Image (cartoon, rainbow, N blue to C red):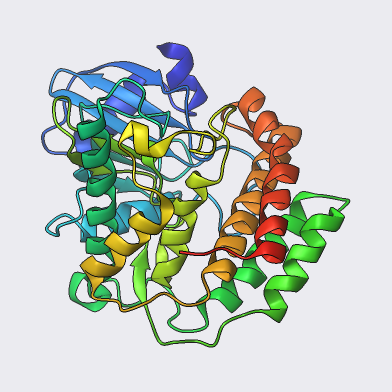
Length: 349
């Protein structure tokens, strides 16, 4: 308990005093427990006389530019509170200048429920599996249908040329994370640059890390209680989120980044990629989706760049979970290989 609070950079009594002064309902902090999962922003469960909460903080040490944006997470969840996208209730943001730990953090309500780490959902029956995937699909379509201006997020990112800007950003992040760029990643960056689709004018609020284990489901129903981990959210192109989630159909089921490759999806009651994409398109009134191979290659590249950064933090001693960070870093070549297959073979939906 004391160790967890010290890891946050503040003593338990000082944290209790601060939170009691800024959150009207908060009183009597008794325990701080660090969650073992998660690689980016250290996250803690706070047990208090007034209830259970979650605190999410920037990590210590030198950080890559624009990374660990807990301020953005807080802002977007606050903006989505009264929409059809389920999010936890956020209570307070402590920016670095006023934070007692000198690191930005925010506090939100704790959501009881289920987190599914295996996308094959082995402990569910076929009916629940289908309903869980349909709930994810519906929430993603609802997110992309939101008017950012209407929820106060019109300035949450730059409109237009999303993929060009993202390719530039993640290329720089990847190159900053390694002294020796791989041949495969170099080829992928060049291919993406040569195959950028024309800007079609679509601008939506995008999550940036939309996947099954970034959601809490109700304890006893296939309903999303809250979508988590909004650190990478911005204004962007909705196909970035859809393709990112659809990587899961191509990732192996074994290993740290579990996917659905090798799973008999029909027998499990799981939709295949084409059916999932079609359901999303129907919900959003889209006749077709062009440039799907580009979106998938970009999704694999972006995840590889993110994990290269995770590995760099482990090497620098700043990773939230160093052992897991090193394993994620080792997955970069596999992601690059999957992107290369799509580059050469395409992808049908």
